[in-house]
Length: 129
Image 1 (cartoon, rainbow, N blue to C red):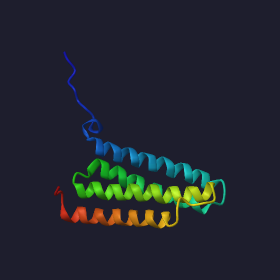
Image 2: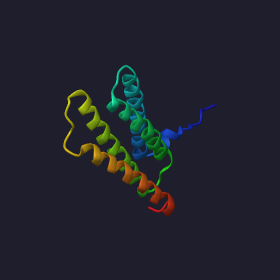
Image 3: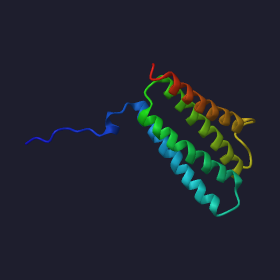
Image 4: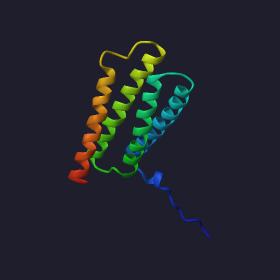
């Protein structure tokens, strides 16, 4: 008897979806690592990085698993890009005492806000492409 092929859900997802799931996993790992590092000292930057990454990691995971339309994709890109820029700027301030560039953290924050608002629009508009 031949075993039937039963691909997992992850194997059936497209590259964009797998990329978002991976980004969510990376954000989660960074969030846990920075939370652990922050617990060993008094670092406001590390605590904020942990909070941001632990909030946005699951959102990226959910969008990777569920979001099908371009609006969902763009909301995820804004969330991921904003999270990376914001966290990277705070990490640079923490470890090299200088931000990435002037306004990097606020720009990342605006990206995250825009991503959440794009998600609202995507949900209200429906699954149109």
